[in-house]
Image (tube, rainbow, N blue to C red):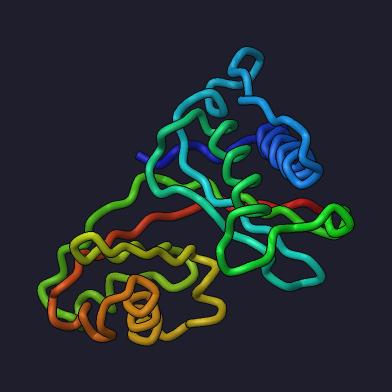
Length: 191
């Protein structure tokens, strides 16, 4: 059963936690784990999230987790800091950039394994713009959030590109050499 959507207050709380973590980390200030006391039960429960940072409309960092290991509020804090400082694709965010960084949070539900009978059936099971996709091949793993469908709307190309991100041969998904999981997100950002 899907989780009830976050309330507007819960969303705002997560955005504030992410912003505070981002600012403190970029400025080299100590950061502390989010205490669960005073949080709603949803924010204190285990949750998985991705935090995406953009500056001037350009991606500046995106880090997250696929499995719930921490209270959702703490998961968001950790990923906001990691997206700012540890996304290997980008230089760490600098102090002078902080005011121009926009935060987007994607809260994930539990991934589900797809078991299609054929590659064509797999393509029919995917819901562009709705499903995030995890591709697993042995120790290799990669994911695209549902938002990636905006840039890769063709399901076959989407899966080929995800294979490439995971470090496996494109079309591996056609040969049944990978496992495919889908998940959905509740996504929101600063205004």
